[in-house]
Image (tube, rainbow, N blue to C red):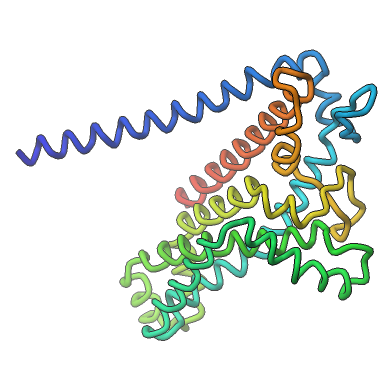
Length: 289
């Protein structure tokens, strides 16, 4: 009986894994089907390196370089803020905070993850954006910097929650062994706990980056939606996700603009795949060490 239950559970898990892979392949195939014809006619190099996105001009210009730069700028800015804060917060909650405070802090962080992105965008637009405009003395607070900070706020709960679970799962024998050898608590946390929990922390960071790259509403409301290459992080930008969300409802199905938006989705899919592939290589290298 026990063997039969184990066999059924293994089969169900295997089927779920296969189904998830099939879904990813189908999504890629759908994007490829809709976007490849446009890329073939317009030119991949011209599409990726073009500096102007004017789909309604005559002739229409479909250059996504400003959109790619805007997406990467906002993503890197959010990661620069969210990763150190998220990992250090997870380390504090799991190893430093008093026991009666851990559950309160973790519940509060998890509650932050439940805030809808449109609410984050609205709050940022009405409170944070005016502060950025006045404090940095810029013409508008709708900038890549504003988008990075608000996206970091959205990514931190994911990073903290999963990193904290990874840190808590480190065997207590590792910590006691390090302390017994004369290491201080900080040395134990930095050289033993963090290294042992690194695979889980990397997974948390990747999920946080995925949340940032795929975010739409918040960046559409906060970053200014200017399809141009910025000279600094304190200028308006436009991301690929915001472009798809803002323009898909205005296009003619099957038209050139419609297919161009699917081509943007295909590029975004490939960028996400490359980021996850590089992270997986780094994770395997860390595990081998």
